[in-house]
Length: 609
Ligand code: F6R
Image (tube, rainbow, N blue to C red; front, top):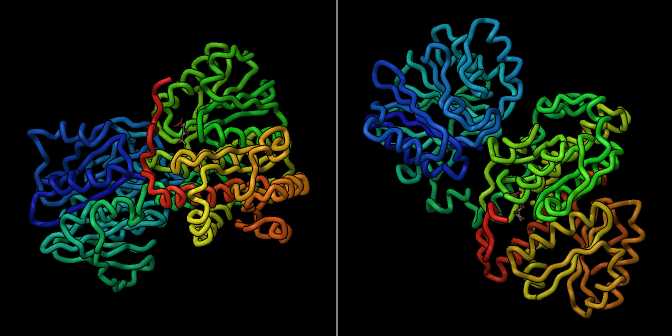
């Protein structure tokens, strides 16, 4: 995620750029910048930090001019810093670009451009676009942009400006949002409607592959092939706050719906095109390095801990290295047995959780090698760890973690497959099978999200129960823990997750008539056992909602209701089964009129012990 804006008109550009970026700060806030053409040159002002830092920097010398672009960043390639902030320029400073997305083939493009003499100023993927434009420009700005688009792979929304054609901005998109706001003698470009809603409600929603040449009094839109496109004006009728949430009532619901994209982005450039291997450019491990580990710890808190439990299963199953999972606040005080044959993996969305950071430091002190899985580039945990794998979920605003969890699962799976590839513990055939299925996951999450009506009904029906139980075995148990955490934190329902086989050792005493039990049953080797446990709770008159794979025709015979998720490998199914549980928690909270995005007593980033 990042936010981008553009202005071309007769008024000063900078005030709109800053106002628009302020409305887009929810899309990223680690650095910001603007570029404005003053009649002679394009002046770029940018800085690390929140938008407030840019505003402070501009005090007293706001760039003057009526054409400009701006950006608020959520770092993916290159840590937050002044030079990695957007806008980015070519060698001459004549071409300037802002970008939201990821350019997957930037490394090879960068190498080619360096060989041709281009000098890079940042570590970002975006800067290659500016240099590529410079390289391909032969006097026609639009033609050069089209040549750039032929050479870049990945996801993007982009706005270009050129000193040679200062009366226009060119914008385009693929897999990232972009809108044009239609003004009177002025036009606006933005990632999202909140940025422009105060200026105009008339918009064009740009589709993938469309290229728009935007001047103050005209907008010329063509498709990928260069054919003109006739677009309908989309009249916005939401208010600014609803627009910021993309029309969703809460950030949590928006983020639940962002999961297909978040997962796709996290996978992008990490799965070989022919599904034969996982590529982890950031690690560059070899067999000798992996063989040196006798043990792996995965340490985290809350939802990230639940993701770590799935990670343990992946690594032990696919790589055959023993893994211990620990809650960060426990780990640091229990004298864990660690030496230089230990790898400690910490998982943290924010990268700032103090217990996780302390556990990481303790591990390092005892001689372990360390790896962080985090969503925030340049965060304390990212800086402290020896190595980092970033999840590319974009900013998570709602306190209840959703897209961070699914991207953590994807990352843990890719990490295990990467390690298995090096150690040769998974056959090439099985690798291909798993990675082919991995590619289906984003579309399957979307499919799961469509089936929301039954979940709303269950939430209404059972939302006023004070106790809910979640059961499952193996990977289903790990997902049950996450489902129960979601339910308690946002709906304040007392929810407990149990390994299904453990119920009869005490908890079964709490199962009485009408108590809702959510039973996950997707793992083949324990399926029959789980079924027996379901029968045990049914015999005590519990109401059972089963969560099963689409190819399961058995479970519905034993439960009161069943929610099915698309069929995939049972290793990957947790990434799908958690989705109805997130939705159930969300709609239960709505039924109980809870403050979904800001649950009581909780904060997004826990930087105290
Ligand atoms: C639950 C939730 C928390 C966090 C936990 C760790 O929805 O969000 O349990 O998972 O506080 O936070 P990070 O991942 O930022 O270290």
